[in-house]
Amino acid sequence: MQHWQAMLVKLVLLLSIVSADAGKKGRHRKHSDIQLVSDDEFRSSLGITNLDAPTFFDATQHLDVILAYIHQQRNVARNHVLVDAFGGAGHLQHAFTSVGYLASGFDASHGLHENILTRRGFFHALDLILALMVGGLLFGGPPCSLFVYLSYAVHLRSRQNRYGNTSNFLVRAANMIVQNWIVLLVICHVRGCYDITEQPSTTAMFEYPLFALRRICVGSQQVQTYMKAWAHELLKRTLLDGCFLLLSKFTRFYNLATQEFTTTKVTVTKAVGFSSPPKFGKTKVLKGKVYYKNNYDKKTKKTKVTGFPDLGLTAIYTPEFCRYVLTVFEECIATVDLPNVTDVRISDYIRDFNNIGLHCVLNESSIMHLACNFNLQAFLKGELVQTRIGQFFDRAQSDMDTPHATFDPYMDVGTAVGAQSA
Image (cartoon, rainbow, N blue to C red; front, side, top):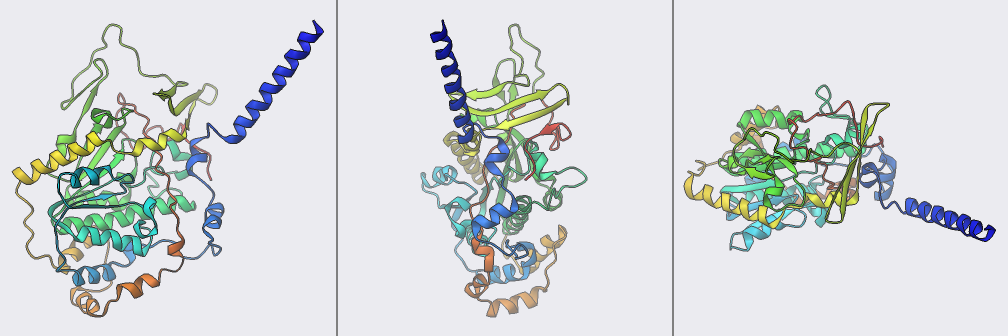
């Protein structure tokens, strides 16, 4: 009997050691561990020692230079039909090029020259947009990880503070990506191109002040859809926002009873044998992949969400969705009159920037004079530490797939604890 007791003790000790090792390896890390580091750690990893050094290119502060460059490039060939922004895998770009269209894309994962937080990266994106034909499409999903409610404990965005916790380096980076993206959207709109911005349904990005103003000024549409309607592994409730005349074609509703997608909203009654939506405490596991887990603390009455590495892969667009974007785009250019853009002047850009509260330092004539002597390469050499910004953002998808809930960009903001503050 003593022999079996000794063996049992050894077995327990062995299991405890294995569990400790697995914990150290971080197989199941918290969402915050996956995407967030402290300011000092991040800057140190990039070799940035001067904490006060300017680290981002802010396009809103260089509108005169940007417009001077646009004037220089006024005769560039406009023969591309798509720019796939933040595309990563480039599935959307491939869907267009595979049928003979000229398409391009950019994503920070491809290098600093495609990171719009750098001067070089922003002007690279600008070059691609300047090559878009009238009626061309700019499609992009800016990084959402610091705008969704899962990471609220880090970004601290609310209706009273839509900029969030700007003392956090990564929150400032996320804000700057959105600001630079909006500048590109304005330029795209003035040039008679369409645009679509994709975000998970729990995002607060569309409530960012500059984004909200831009949406009001151009009268952009917004529709809700589900990526699972195009063979995504998760339901992935998604918002598409932009100036695209056939955007409503993407609208999808999910019938919980029949588990089918419809283009019109229907009132659902609970069917016999219908299983309820997952309760708190359940883990989202599908096809061997672990995405997230909801933990409800009865004492504090708060929900803690733990995300896992597989969650980041859900940001990739499926080939089926990309082909549908192509189909709708072709229908648009075949059946809808293209925007009436014949002669775009610098004053047109200035007007649209002014409408959303962005003011150029120079007027139209001064900008045209600046264009005569503007040297882009010299301007890019003044980047300083901007070139040392790495591929910092994590494309972790944070859509909790709650199709039964009413959309609110700040839903559960008082109860959801997505991570510990960096």
